[in-house]
Image 1 (cartoon, rainbow, N blue to C red):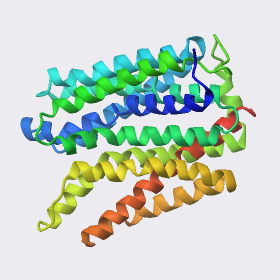
Image 2 (image 1 turned 90 degrees about the vertical axis):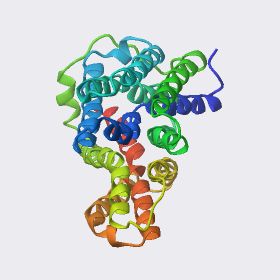
Image 3 (image 1 turned 120 degrees about the horizontal axis):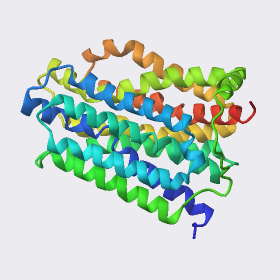
Image 4 (image 1 turned 120 degrees about the vertical axis):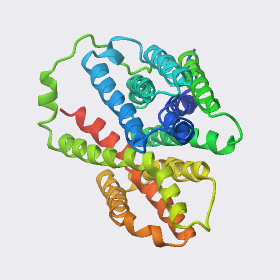
Length: 333
């Protein structure tokens, strides 16, 4: 039996957090793999590109095949989370060769398309009213889930790197089972068996939808680049300032995870202010941080850390706002 509505969002948030912990698990163990197997310096870019490429292709294929509309979204979430978890775990068995690892990261990203977007669909099927705030919590869960592998690595530096992959894979499956057993599909779910390609052209005729989509595209382009390179930014700073040292993984976790509360705060502000204005402010602050980032490496460490924390909040605070704008305007097309 589905839980009371008050608990539904909490359970979806937990499942979303658990599933998205797979996203940057490969990045969290990358320094260990690079050191152990002498991987090239470009490995970070390849690793990040592999999982993101998989997610993009997976999202397109899930959409074209109408998977979350034709089948039970909670079952799609469960199946995707299990396959993504095993793809994540497969790195353990082929750690010395970069090519297989990139393939596994690609498939992890591919099946994340059945976790993040489908989890948001399940929430939308429960919360027709107050969707913006619900998405704020969901994207916040995504942010903290993304940061979680860095926390595992930072707290377990004395443990083998494989523990990060075991931990995130187990967490992903646990969250999906939890959602499938105690949440299920929303009461407002609409079943559809067909995909109409002409709908893509129809929906883009909506000016507001088009503007929100392009804004979201620019936001996501920066967001995942920032998250991927946060550990690199700290490592580079410590290379420049040899007298300063700290736990890079824990610092990276703090900078990425602080975006979780920022998503919720942004969603609350959007209830009082115009959605577009709040999204514009967050995107502008993030863009300015990106513009001035090359200049901050000469700052004292507390100021450098403060800059990255501000950037970590601004870079993702607009994500649930863009999602809400797109959802609201898509329904009008």
